[in-house]
Each structure stands twice: as structure tokens, then as C-alpha cells.
Length: 598
Image (cartoon, rainbow, N blue to C red; front, side, top):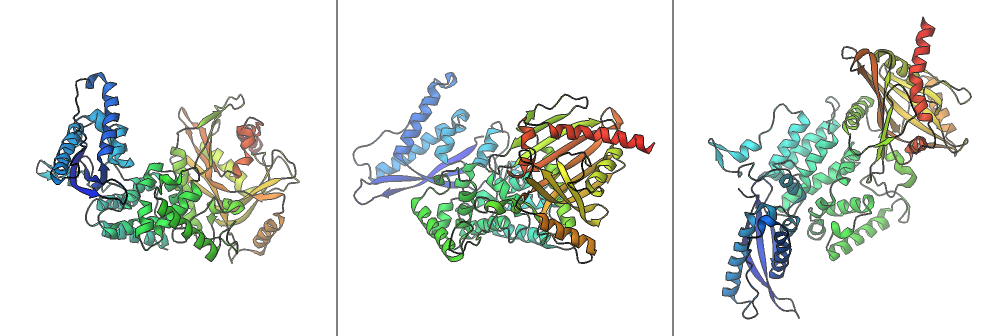
């Protein structure tokens, strides 16, 4: 069973003015291991000749292939364009490809994949699957069509997982447009519903939506301009809607995942053809997003056609002249359908905060817990920090995302007190204790010089304002306005204290005059020496230690923007150990509190 089926389905004579005529061969490629839509490519004989030379290098370097003799039809210098000569060469070139198809070492080489334009998602599948592990779709297995068997939707999945799986399955069938509309209706009805919980789309699930799974292609590949024009237009329209901050409350996460995809996937979207052949501007918008947020990429990676790029530049200029953008245009207004981190400058930080004017606080809370779970499961590529010597197993790790420029910090340590005691202490410290800059030593975190509870939303949700001192200046400060969320499972002895930044906050109409005054005072105190910083979903998870339920394992996980990380950067760089001493203070303060109670 081979990975791919290859067939030369046509040949055409190309006669460019002033140049020698040549023949182009149309090749159809099908996957035998997934339901990826077949694709076509066009090759000249010279490209076959170049492929042959590269394959010969692979063969000569592999002892197991020494006896292999690939036969490429020879060049012809007379009657090369004659119909009978072209027909024979087409037949011989297909026979040449069939020789290669049955040799896994050659078929799974980058040389061959590049020649056949194999999609990145399919390459991933082929790399991680031994040859012959799955039957050809359509083959009968015990009377059941194997393509149906492998595309079965697991009913034990969550609603979100089922909807994504059904869309991926639909993208591999003739009902692609119907599947796209069905998913879009489900998703946006879910996000705008007042009665139902919002969709819980994790980053991994969004990535699966974009790139597909082992069997089916994803939304990104469905944007390729193959077969039905209605289908590829509908595909890129759905993608734009998911990334659009005006349509999708959670566009920030969808955008982050899209921008972290392998760059080869952008090329496979055929964006240049969307620009040249579509009357809609969705292709222009995707190019704008990649250009502004992935400036390190060569534009030929995603728009290789020069004419298409010129059309994009005219479109971009028209947008600036008509509406303006921050940092450009005539009226300096922002014209971005996505969160344009490259152009928003100082306002960029606020784009990562939850918009209080658009979201219910319980909806924000659920999303904070969802993203914190993802942060907890992320264990790759962290660097260790040499923390101070201690007896509580303090471990500190961090990493920086090269694309989003965001930082993630993980601190774990043990506390010689039960989980509920640690939770009660920290929740009291972070919600009910207030102090001003004139007071000191009020918090476990000595970096916080001022804190107050702005509003109590309910027993488990609070708006908290905190001010942090700067490491390198006694006159510079950073402040955070946070939605702080509590959750406790007393039976499982697992507790969470999570928080994330909000913007456009206004106290509720039924708030007291005192609460409204607090907020006005906070806004008034935000002078040039205090800069509003943004904290992405972060917080504490507290659970019993493995060897003793009366002791706690505490995990503090924080997600910073490139600006807000400055509050802890000195500690990560080894210039100060204040953060580590603050963490160790937690046990000391709890112990002192217990003695005081006794």
C-alpha cells in the first residue's frame, strides 16, 4: 500500500511569444492514507530532470538502494513537440513516477514531497505513520467502507470536539459548503447566546480545526483554490470571521494559534489566487494579518506571485487613504479587522485584556479557567532559573514565544500546611487585604506596593487593582486591573485563585458610591509614572502533596505580555531574587497566622 497515488492526466503545449515552445504535464496526486482532497500540479520535463538528479544523490548515499536503477526518459532534440512524441513521453514519465511511488525512502523524502507539493498536514501524518498502517479509503473491511470507519465521530467527545470533527469530515466530502455553514452557525450562535455557556475552544482544538487530523484536512487547506469556487470562498470567509475581533469575542486566541502555524501552511492557502480571482477581500485580509504579525517571513512564502503582491499593496494603500490606521493614513484612526499588534504600539497591550464592555464576567471567568488549564498542560521548551537555596523544593521555569513575544512563568513549591489553609490565606491576601503605598509588608508579594478591592461581583469574583514597583526606578510603577476568580473543590482538596486583566471597566450601576469613588481615584492616579500593564490568564493551583494530604503542592503560573514581564524580568535574569523570597514568605506568613490564632 503506497502513501500516494500519482497520475499524469494531461499534457499541453505552451508557446510564449519570443520563447521556445515546451510541454507542461498536469499531474494529479491522491493520498491513500487520508481523505485529503486530491490536488493537481504542473511540471515541465526540466523539473523531472532536476528531480532525477536529486533522487540519484539519495540513492548513491544509501547502501540498501545501490541496486536501484531509476529510468527517466531521455531528452529529445527533434520533433519534441510532435503529438506522438509528447504522448509517449507522458506515458514514460508516469512509469518513472510509478517506480518511485513503491520505494518509501524516496517517497517520504523532502525532495519528493517538495516536487509533489505535498501539504504540510499530510507530511506530518506520513512522518508519524509506518507505511501500510491504514487501508485505502473506500476499501471494504469486513463489509464496511474504511473511509467511513476511520471518520467515525466519537460521541464521548465534548460538544466542541464533535463539531470540529464533523466539520473536518465534511471538508473531505462534496458537502463542504454545507459543513462550513453548519459550523459557523453553531459557533457564533454559541458565542452570542445569553443562556448557553460559550464554546470552550482550546488552543489545541483550534489548531486541529486549522490543520486537520490524521485522516481529514483542515480549514486552512480548504482555502486552497481547488474544485468548487464556492467552497474555497466559504472556507476563507469562515477563517476571516473567526479572526475578526468585531465578530468573534475570542478572536485573540484564534489569531495567536493561526500565527503560530508552520509557515508552509500559509503558502498552501493559495492567497495569491484569492487576491487575483476573487471579488471579495478576504484573501487581502489574511495577507494583511500575516504581513503585520509575522514580519520576519519573506512575503514570497505566502504570496509568491509578484502581480498579486502589487494588487495587495494597492489595496492596503486604499485602506489607509480611505480610513487611516494608527501610525499611518491621514486621520490616524485604526483600521484593523484583527488585533494588529504591530501597529497599535502603546495600545497593543490593551488588546490582550478582556473587554469588560462586551463580555459577562462569568463568561470571562470560564475562559480564564480554560486558558489556565492549557497553560498548566504546556510543558515544552521551558528554561530553568537558578532559584535561591530553600527547603521547600522551589522550582522556577520560563519561556518566551518567538511569535507572540509573550512570556510564560511556572513556579512550583511545597507548603507545610493543608491545601485549604493555603487557599484561605492567599484568597484573603489577594482579595480582602487593602493597603496603600504608605504601608509596607502587607502582602506575601513584596513587589506589590498597593492593592484594593474595587468591586465584589459575587462570592467568587472580584475586581482588584494592584500597583507594582519598578526594579530600576523608585518613581516608576506598573498597575493591573484584574478580574480575580476563586474556585474550590473541597472534596478533592484542589483550589484555584486565577486572575486576568480587563479593560473598559466600569463599576455596575448598583454599586455603592464608595466603589464608584474607588474607580475614579484609580483612574485619577494613573499619571505618567504609572503604566497600565496586562496580565493574561494566570494564578495559583493548590492541591495536596503526593506523600501527605496535610501538606500542599502549590503551582503559580503566569502569562505575561512583552511589557508586563518587566515586573519580574529582573528576577528571571538573576538581577534580584525578590520574587523567590516572596514565594517563600507564603509558608512563613501562614505559620505566623496559625500561631496568632492559637
